[in-house]
Amino acid sequence: MIHTPRRSWRAVAPVLVIALIAAACSAAPPAGTAAPPAGTPASSPAAPPAGTPAMSPGGGTGEVEIFSWWTAGGEADGLEAMIEVFGDEYPDLELVNAAVAGGAGTNARAVLATRLQQGDPPESWQGHAGQELIGTYVAADQLEPLNFLFEEEGWLDVMPETLIPQISEGDDIYSVPVNIHRANVMWFLEENLTEWGVTAPTTWAEFLETAATLQEAGVTPLAMGEQWTSMHLFETVLLGELGADGYAALWDGSGDWASAEVTSALETFSSVLEYTNDDASTLSWDNAAQLVLDGDAAFTIMGDWAEGFFVAQGLSPDDGDFGWAAAPGSDGVFQWLSDSFVLPKGIANRDGALAWLRVAGSKAGQDAFNPVKGSIPARNDGDRSLYDAYLQSAMDDWGSNDLAGSLTHGVVASDAWKAEIDTALGLFLADGDAAAFQTALTDACSAEGACQ
Image 1 (cartoon, rainbow, N blue to C red):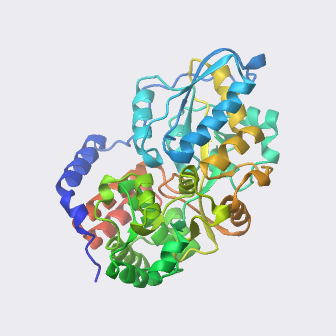
Image 2 (cartoon, one colour):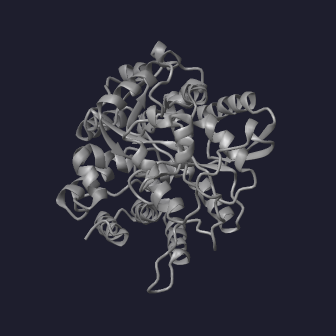
Image 3 (spheres, rainbow, N blue to C red):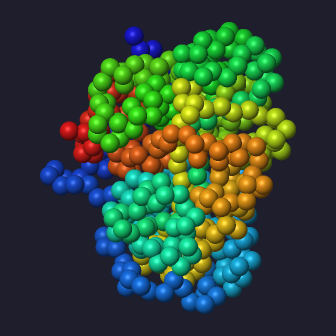
């Protein structure tokens, strides 16, 4: 039997359900028509002809508006570090940091969609490599290909071969990746675990046993935040319970969302939710991570931007101030995502945008940004000495582990498919109906065309 999620989600159930239904209704296209990708403008501005020079000498002048969702802790500091490199290299350009708060870009992408509908794109925006990029902005014909820039800068020689297809459609490359993040990380303070008489669990079954012990001691076992962080937790539970191949099969159509294995994984997910904090729906991801630092929670599962947040608080992995492990059941698997920047069509300052992209893809830019952000460079020639013990371990794992793409952070599903999953997840958090959740997940895969 599947357990009912915790009470705090029930308390906000009416609001969640009404909001989700309203969003679903407003997004629905007329019968018999296909919904356009999120942010599709009435008509996309024309791009310069193929072969247009990358930019004028010196990178031009004027303002360059860069749009992202990096506003918390190490991510904001990392962005500022890369902006400093940009200022040094292009002093005649004024960079406008148009970051919008909201973890995983939930709020930022909504703002961006509105701007694109209004024909007001920033010079460049942050987007996740994978289907978020290809299935949304490339499908809407909103981006210029960047093959010329990759050739001029020699980036094909220093970017991982596994990453290029995730930013490409056919033979065209559409974004400049600035980093690699790991999603499936469990964070903790070793000294607290010792005090409480527990160790980091390696499977979800072990986690549930450990969580019961912690709860009896009056400690919140797992810190979680607002809904997107529950999707993040959901994908790590799926990965841990199904394995890398079983998880991948859900996204390429060879797996079955209606299978008994998925049913079992949903039961585990429901049980795990029982051990999260009651105020999860009111917290941001960094607020949840702070519960671990304050000793109010034992663990949090979050991408390694949490490492940047911890370091920004004055902690150091080199000194053992905090610990980490692969999320339960996923040792030897690197669940990945990559932040990247794009070249939109019809922007006011194309030369300025290309200057930003040159910095974003450069060794100097990535080695300034990533050690602070809590990520590793997308380039394979980063200066390893600049990265701390955790990030060096992530570099090693990226090169040796099996790879699995993130759902929450845009790799495996288009924005439209992810939105259907998010709606289903919100309803599940409100009512605890796992059977209905599984049916909705199955239907979402069919609607995407991935499942037959």
